[in-house]
Length: 326
Image: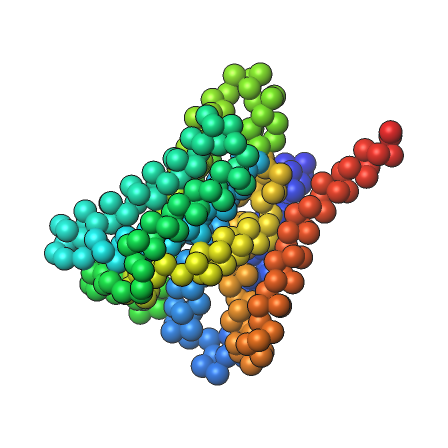
């Protein structure tokens, strides 16, 4: 029984995010003019997957007790790059996809190197690098444009077997290939340990620097996958500053809604994914209920504030309890 209690305590945030998403999605489909069908599920999946990739990228950094404010700009940069090089025959397209992923991983590695070896605060370092990444995106696409391999884009944004969204299946594959091996590796445990207590992790002989560096690098890679999928969905590249900032902020909300502690050392990318889908469904609900577009940013801002407040509440409660013994 104690094992089940421990498991539930560890997965409480993930289960809560899943419950919120299921409840909101049921309300959404029940009030959607088309009802619950494969097309509605596909559209919701395609929109949710974009934020899910960015939320996963943010999670990898947050568990190390950091935060990545450049993740949205890596997302934009790789979207603009993909609109240039993910074109042509299958071989050229494959090289283009690899190039986009490498650039994303390099951006994440640069963030990690500055934070770890330059010893700058993550929030300061990623604000600076985010500005650089946006500048590069703007150089690539001063105005929206470009194209992408349509066969590949259609394959990854359509339905499999007539009902399963291909984008959702791609997300599951990425979780199995990237997140699961990382979270179970020595470097993944080191990243968690550094988020819980870096001093204790260092004294235990864990590879803290390599764990954190890998977390930042994989975060950039996941953001690049999000940028690729944005190109597949839109068939274009667009260095939209507001969009990059929005995805960065929404990724933080998704992370907190998914039970990942902003103070590091606790949480899972799985929870962040459910948090992303739950947060994205909020916008769908506003559309279904014909909420005034002028009020939608205010409503989403309130949800973001509440999500961040939930993340801080646990630490606030612990501090109060400790003060009782002061």
